[in-house]
Amino acid sequence: MLPAPFLNTMAALLTIAIFSFLYKDNPFYKFAEYLFVGIAAGYIVALEYHNVIVPNLWRPLVGGDLNLLVPFVLGVLLFSRFTSGFGWLSRWAIGLMVGTFSGLAIIGFAQGDLVAQVQANMLPLKTETLLGTFSNWVIFIGLLSSLVYFFFSKEHKGALGASAKLGIWFLMVSFGASYGFTVMSRFSLLIGRLLFLLVDWPASFGLHWLH
Amino acid sequence: MEKIDRRYIFLAILLLVLVPLLVPIGLPIRVSREVQSGYDAVAEIPDGSTAYFAADYDPATMPELHPMALAALDQLFSKNCKVIGACLWPAGPPLLEDALRRIGEERYGKKYGVDFVNLGYKPGNEVAMVSVGRSIRATFPTDFYGTPVESLEVMRGAASLTDMAILVNISAGYPGTKEWVQQVQSRYHVTMVAGCTAVSTPEYYPYFQSGQLSGLIGGMAGAAEYEKLVGKLGTATRGMDAQSLGHLAIIAFIVLGNVLYFATKKKAP
Image 1 (cartoon, rainbow over the protein chains, first blue to last red):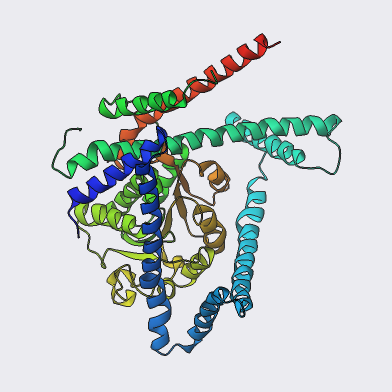
Image 2 (cartoon, rainbow over the protein chains, first blue to last red):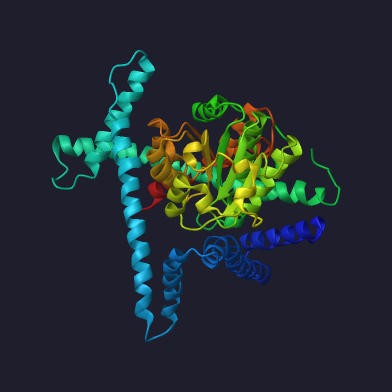
């Protein structure tokens, strides 16, 4: 294991190299970018081998669990894409994956979103508190008007048009909230890197100048 | 205005973020209902019970998510809970390891394999989640270090997610909170608390409103609130002054941009 001061210095220099793009594109930025892509690819391969292929496939297979020959063969078939004559064989494995994920996604959406969210939005329009009543009315009107906005089978005129317009306002408020949260995320990343440069990097040399 | 070099804006933002990090202002942090509910949900599980800690994030979102992971683990270990940690993001295991060791081992003197474990990474997204719901050992036959999980004391009595008192998910996106709710919470009705990036927080509010999530910790602000609740102020709290000033700068830029836009529009023939 390399010493922490060396590793942190590497991380700090690479952070500065990436930040330098804000001034203009340059070779330091390019170097950091390519280095990251290369290391990430190598890391994934090593991780998949040690954390997945060996414990989940190879060890049980050589231990006598022959059922695992099925995923093993399907996995090998994926590599047939690299050949021109047998590339079609990979479609079996891909088909199985697409089918499994589609099935899980549909069940998950039906259980977790559709039924649960419809249930959650059947709210009493009169509650014990004024704030509760107001909140439920906002959710009720916002939900209906937003749904009307996405109803395209009839021209948005008259009451339907007014409701759709109200729906746009609700959608705009939600987009605004999303934008605010996005700004918070981006600032967090900048703050994280600056704290690393100001606190963690010097601390690895025993320098605790910022408390 | 269009001719202004955008690097001046970058510089202004940098200074506005840098100054409060060097000279903290100490702006107040108010705990929101979502974070308080998450804290209460963890507080309500029996002392010494087992929690599943799904650390689905990577270094790119570390400033937002690592502080809330540390705070949530602090609360769990303070209740002598056993923690089974795992990741569905490939770069997650070293971060989970850091969080478990720093809080579990160094702060509370807990032992690896006895009080907590890092099961490492598994691919498969929703498939892996459903598999964990059925059997943790079948999904993770070994831990992050390659040790068979049957040999670990912490795994006794922890066959599937239904044996867990709570599921805490720290999520940077896909696969994450949405998929855990869809595939596991709605299927096994496990108590679930989610901590997520600010970008994805609005998407998960309906899950909190419906009660599918018992708590929702959103972004650095949520992490700072959680740190306040557990009484261990960390990097999220430290970053909140800069966060607030940064937001004020963005508001000022938006107002200025709109004023100048309408002013130049009026002048145009």
